[in-house]
Length: 234
Image (cartoon, rainbow, N blue to C red):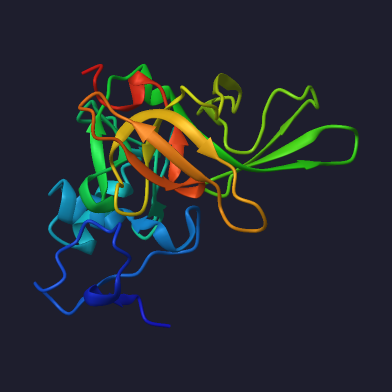
């Protein structure tokens, strides 16, 4: 199987120029599904820390590049929304955040913020023993006690070292959210109204913004955050 991907057909979220060359690297198996961006693209095209695959492999073999607290050696490892990238030798830390047009962008954060990552709960399933399994947007799963605390649509913050939940943001009117897909990807505001749609169609979410504009999108495209995830703390 080819290790190359045509630039013209990459997902809109990939931060690559489409007309500079015919091919780019293909994402390997891993989290985030088809939206995952190969780490090589982040190192080469976004940050400029490597000029080619060989240089990227050399850097990764030094165990100085971490994603969500784990050293990564595979340059094709997918990187996606809300992942935490740490470059320990450079003492640089980034959160992957939706940018303009839905392209993945990097927001600089401090070392303390790099110790945990945000996840949107997309599934909640009862498992044997009476516990509950939470499925997150990136494919990660967590087992929690069935205390009715968490619901699909909520967001949680998970510690990278121990996998413990350190914060919980409920999906409700008044919550701060960002759009991660669609025409309003990258925009931030507060949920003004959740419009429940009968049948199998997605619910609509009306979001208000400080500039008075606001926007409307589908439930799937919004993720609950707090102010620390917008870069305003920098």
